[in-house]
Image 1 (cartoon, rainbow, N blue to C red):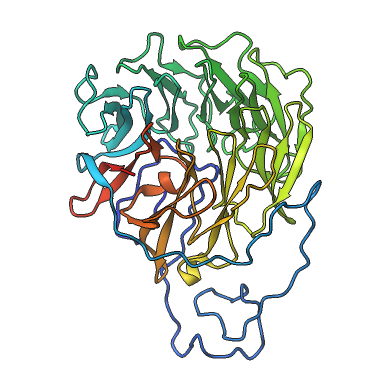
Image 2: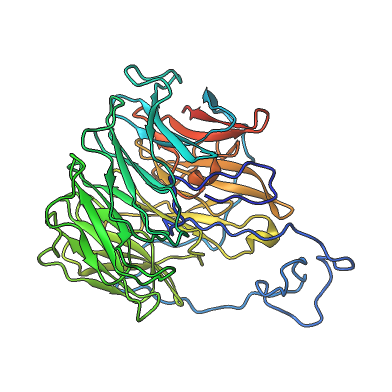
Length: 500
C-alpha cells in the first residue's frame, strides 16, 4: 500500500495488498505543486508546443498549446459496436458523505475488509506493527458492527506481513504472509493460514512453503471454486534480486497439504493466476529473453497443461486475467500501439480484440467482472494528473464475448477503481486532487445501462489505497457496501457501511 508523503494522513502498511498491476496497483507521487514566479497560464508560448509536452511539469500549459490529430487504428477482428464520446461529460457536484461508522478500530491498528460471508457477516483483517514485527488477526462482525457469535474476543491471530488475503464461497478466509517482505537476502517461507467461517484456524493449517527469496508477486492467493487455494512464489535457489529466477505455483487442499503433482514449476517468472469455473487455473508466464512478452498457460487440477489449450503469446504487457462463467478468458493488453481488451475462447484461440477508445496509463486502468459475466474497464484519459490536479476517466462495459454494452462508457473524474455490485450496478472510486496533492475521495454508482445513480457522485472520507486499486469494498446481499475509512478527528480507522 502506498500514500502521498505530504497529504497529512497515516500511510497504510503493506499487508493484504501487493504492488501488482491489477489490476493494477501503481502509486507514483511527485513533489507538491509549486508555481514559478513570472509565468502565467494566459501567457502564449514563444513556440507552440504539445499540450502534453510541458517541460518540467511545474508551470501551467501555454494558452496556445495544441493537440495533434491522429488517425485512429481500426480494431480487429471487428470494429467497436457503439460510438464513443469524444470527451468526459461534466458530473454533478459531489453530494455529502452518507456512510456510517459501524466499528471503531484502535488508534494503532490498520485493517482491510476481506469479504462478506454467506450469513451476511463482514470479515476484517486487522494488523499493526510492533517492536517484534507485524501482528494480525481476522475477526467477523454483523452488519450493525457487533461481534459475530462464536468468534474469539480479539479475533483469530494469524501471521501477517507483505502478502494477500482471499475469501472462499463458504466464508473461509485465507491469509498469506511474508514477514521479511520482498527485499530480504535471506530465504524465508510464505505462511498461508485458513480461518473457518466459525472463527477457528482450520485443522492442518498454516502451510509453510519452501524457503526462498521473494518478489512482488510472491504470495498471490486465488481460490478454486471447490475450495482449494493456490499461490505463487519463486523456487529455492533464486539469486538475490534476480527477476528471472525459476518460479512455482503451489496448490493446497482444504486440509492444508500440497496437492498431488503440485507445485507447477517454470524456469520463467509467473504472475496473475486466475481460476475458471471448471477449476482450470490460468497464469501468465513471462519470457525473460523478451522483456514485456509472456504467454498465457492453462493448468488442470492435476497441475498439467490442460488438453486442447493453445498457449497464447502476448508480445506486450498484460493485466490480471479474468475468466467469465462461460469459460472465456479476458485481459487488458497494453503496448506501444494502445490498449486492447482481448478475449480468448475456452481452447485459447482468439475471440476478439477491442481497442479501448481512450488513452490509458496501465498504472491506473482496471478490469473487473460482474456476476452476469459482463466486463468493466476503467481507463484514464489524456491529461497530467500531477499538473492539473485531476484527469478525466471513463468506465467502459463489455459483454462476455467482448462486444460493447449499449449506454457505456460512463465518465468519471479521475483514475478509477471498479466494483460490480450484486444488483447489477457498478461502483467506482477516485481521488480528488488540488494544488498537486490528494485532498479527498469520491464514489459514483452507475446503473447497468451506464446511467449515473441519483445522489452520486458522493464525497467520501479517505478509503485507503485498497479501494483505489480494486479491493477493499465489499457488498452484502442487500446491496450495502463496506470499507475501511480513516477518521482524522480520532487519527484512527473504522469499518464503514454505505447503505443504498
